[in-house]
Length: 92
Image 1 (cartoon, rainbow, N blue to C red):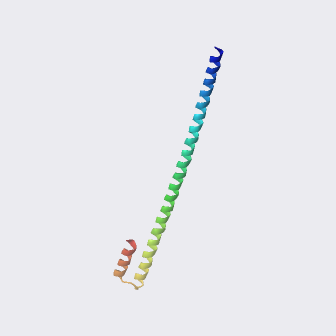
Image 2 (cartoon, rainbow, N blue to C red):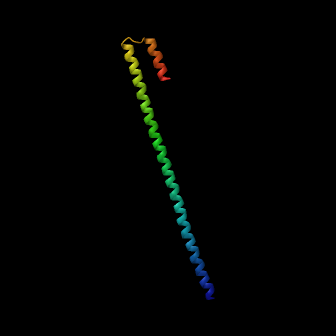
Image 3 (cartoon, helix red, strand yellow):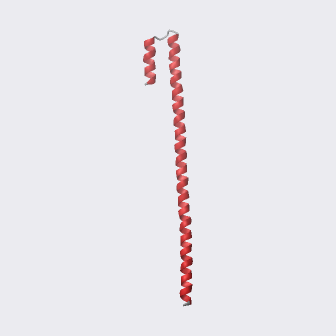
């Protein structure tokens, strides 16, 4: 009878250890997934920021080119028709 009691207690302790270690392992896996998700979010945010900066630089570059064309037109170096063609070429 004492043997059954000892084996019963040992099985209960063994089951408790397995449950506790299973929870720890699952928490570790979840933490690793969260870290990977956060790093992917940072990569996306970084690429969005770089893309917005490129668009901003592109827009300012277009404006500068059109302003240069306008100066040439005002100086009489190019005609209105040439200005329109050049502007269309820049915008497209």
